[in-house]
Image (cartoon, rainbow, N blue to C red):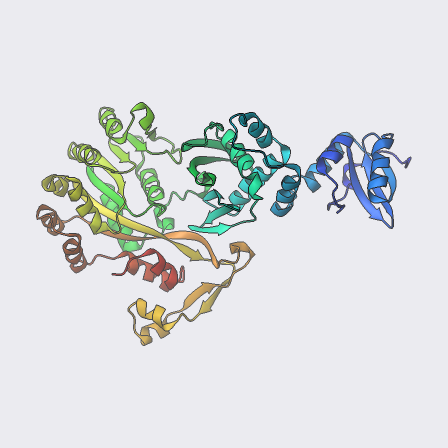
Length: 508
């Protein structure tokens, strides 16, 4: 035993002392932390230096002399957390630790819920789930996927629209990890046969982040997805979203109209919600009452009345929209037009003096007209209410930290529809791959747009119930700037690559 005075906090090590099989639980229970190893002597700080049982146990386990220094319990606990806690460990280490401490249980019985709840409340599982969530937020992931297969349990992060596999926990931890997330989302852990939805609100690095949780039963157990809704990633600036100048000017004019319907189209995950939120933020002012009806409400916007649909209690888009109109709004956002009934009420709202925004799942701007007509919307009503359709996709942006000039393959340059002379005058870029972009060559995303303004000629096509192809031909003659053309402009500006544009757009 060393008889020096108590250690001060700055005397504790800055890096963890690597000792095989030394558990954090043992250190916390016995209130000690390793300081350094010199020759065959292990120096430790202890809150109770007279605890000879712990000293003897360490001597026996590691065959070293033990030199004890006195430290305060608080300083020792803080050092253990800093050096060996969840924040300090690699995901690999935490998975390994959880694998050692947690053992498989039989999930076939009906009395396993209490076992499962206990398992999900074990420190290693809590630490593992926390680290998986923290890592996802730190690397700007939009979703975390927990997927069980026959012989493995896979965890994947969606970063900039692409899924990436991360260090996955052992298959036998699947039930405990899923249960832990379900407990956090206040879901029923006993119900493993039906899909469930929930929400989690966490404070991470002084930021409040919402997580939307969805579970579905699969052949090999429950699959769970967490959507990360970080308000800090919401860009409420139309120019920063990627609007080209010529479209932005027309779109500004359109959203200043007193009434009518504006649609944003694109597949799931193409940034439609962000564009609509940004649009509402742009036109929001004290003289307008803005009401939204969403499924679900992703981000809270100041000064805007947001309603979440809840089919379980009968609050659907149709019933909600009827109620909204009686609330005397100026501007309405309906999350999505899914059926004829919603479409009819939306069009009636636009006809009766409201500016209405909504989304549709179509491939391009012209396809939105055909989709509504196919739903059974009256052509004359559609032609008199529709103001414009904005189609969009998201392309990944070349990482600014490892951006370098490159020469794409000839077939890629040909796809841009430019000749060799034009190509020679352009500079093409790619991301080499670095730590900042996780060696993907991309960091962040930007939208590419196609904007169809409904003028007299397009209105005539709607009245005639023309096909998507006919409407597109008419629009192209009038100078429609297609998704792919906007993509090529962003390639020329060095923001993205030809392959990215080809990945998210259809052949024209």
